[in-house]
Length: 358
Image (cartoon, rainbow, N blue to C red; front, side, top):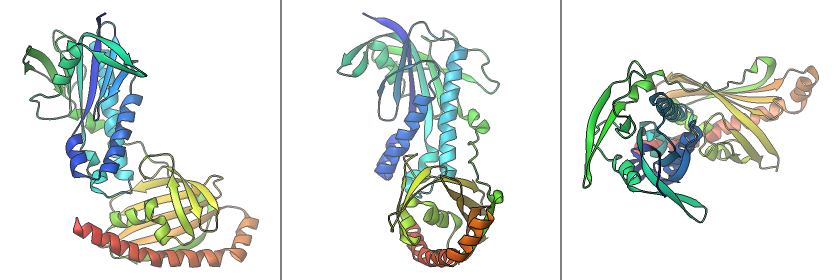
């Protein structure tokens, strides 16, 4: 039996080039995160028919939604998609080509209303019908900018009224072997001007006492040093006593995640990260679950090719705990941090070489 309903396809443009030219594993994880962002932004009760590599086929039976309801859904998905990319771009530790170019991915959204029906293959629900084909044909069109919302005349006979002051509608048609498909479209990139990433929580050490502070300068740029110090895949290579660090709150390493640090002595420490950033100074902190200890990293530009790294260690203010730490642990921790800073020099040289080779 045929049914009428909305077909709604958010499509990530640049995906094929992104995967072909960049590290496949991180490309896959970036796209996976973005697809989950789009699914989580579903506020209309849309059903997911299938994930199509770089796109999601949503559908909803019933009458065509109002322009205002549709636009609200488009705006939500577009803004959440780009907010996530912006946040990842300034919080990521990884400097591979995939992660560097993730910010360039685009989102376009197709809306079409028509007849289709569904059938099941085991646990999977598939859509079938001419209008399903039409919706997919519209993904290939002559629109140059790949940040737009396209809706067919099946959704609305006329372009919608003023949904937003910046919005301008254009009309065109898709030529197919079964006839022309007329549609309207509007660019969505003006929405990006208002998008700001959510601020990262910065752990304020004001309620704690600084117990240890060590510094060292490195002949490198600030982003490379941030990559070396912050990326958990490298932590065991320079921080004394660390066997490995595992992240379990995100697919890809970035600030703001919760991590599990496994020490060579068998101890396991769970901690969360926080972060602040500008072009000349990057700070990030790692605090244990009980919020008793903070390790605070400060990266400051000395000049474009030299960066100072300072590691500060804080304890929660408690006179007895501070006194015992000074007696039993302070000197050893200073030695550990200083040895770690020396170890870091070799890793930085390696990363500098990798950057020059790319």
